Image (cartoon, rainbow, N blue to C red):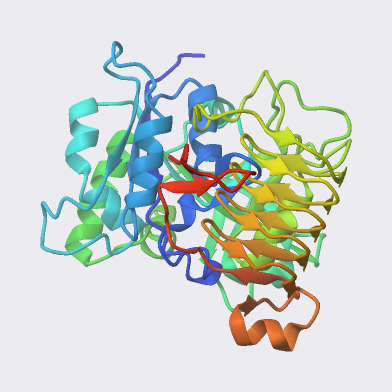
Length: 419
C-alpha cells in the first residue's frame, strides 16, 4: 500500500486538574510514570516506532517541565529535516488567546500543515499509557478511503460518559457519534460496554484544512464536540478497532490490547501495578517496540542492603541496610535509609526517606524529605491534614523544593545529577 506521508500533532496542553497535586507545577503529559518515563513518552515513542517522525507537540498549561524534557530527551536527528519533535506553544497568530480546544489548537498552527504539505495529519492525545503501531491505523484509513479515522475500543458503560461514544457498522463506518454523553449508548449485543473514542484521529489533509476553516467561521473549537459530529453528516468517518493493532515483541503473559487513561490519581496509581511482577500486564521491556525517554547520565543504583520484593529501582537510587521495599517503584536519585518500610509506593526523583519511616500506598513527588520515623498511609484522617488522600485511599505528597545539591549516603553535600 502507498506509504502516504503523515505528520503528527500531539495535544500536550492538558491541565490535568484531576491529577493534583502532581500537576501543581507541571502539565499532565509531563507527569512521571514508571521508573524512568513521563506520560508523554508513550505517544511519542509510538509515533517514532511507527516511522512517523514529523511531530509537533502542542503545549499550553505549566509547560516548562515538558519543554525541558523534550529538549533533553527527544532530539531525533538534526541531519534529517523532516524528523523532529518540536514544542509549539500558542502562537496567537489568529487572535490574542490561548488554545480554546483541540480544533482551535490545530487551527492556530494551520500554517505548519500548509508548510509540510502532508497527505495525512494525525492528531493524538498525550495523556495515555499504551503501545500502538499507528501505521496500521493509517493503512486502515487508506484502505477504506476514509476522510477521518478515529481510534476506538470498548470501555465499561459506566465509564463511557468521559469519552466520545461511537456507533459503527461492521466495516467500521461510523453512523453516530456522541461526545461525552450523559447517557451513553451501549454496544449492540453488549449492554455493559460502549465503543469509545481514544481521542486519536487521522485526517486526510484537505478534509482537515476545510473543516478547520469552517470551524473557525462557526466559532467551533473542539474536534469531539463540534468538528467530528458535523463531518459525520457529509464525509466518510471510520472507527479503527484498537483491538486489532499488533505490536511485535509482546509477550504471551501481557495484555495484548493495553491502554490506560491515567487521568485520575487512583487510575495513575493502579496503572503502576501493571508494570510490576515477573509477568507484568504491561512489560516495559520490549526491544522491538521500545519506549524512549531521558538519556540520563547518572550512576547505576546501589543496593547497600535491605529486603526488596517486586519493585523497580531507577538509576542512582541508594537503599540501605534494614530497609524493606515491596510492590514499589523508586525513581532516580532517591535514597532509602535504614529501617524504612515501603509498601505499594511510588517514590519519585530526588526523594530521601529517612531512617525508620513507614509508608504504605503513598505517592511521594519529587524533591521531598520524609522525616525519620514518619508514618504515612496508615491513618487517612491524619494524612488528610497534611496531604491529599484519594477516594481509593492513596496518599499523595506534593513536590518539595527543588535543590541542585543533594546529600549522598554519607551525608556529604554533592551536586545532583538532576535533569
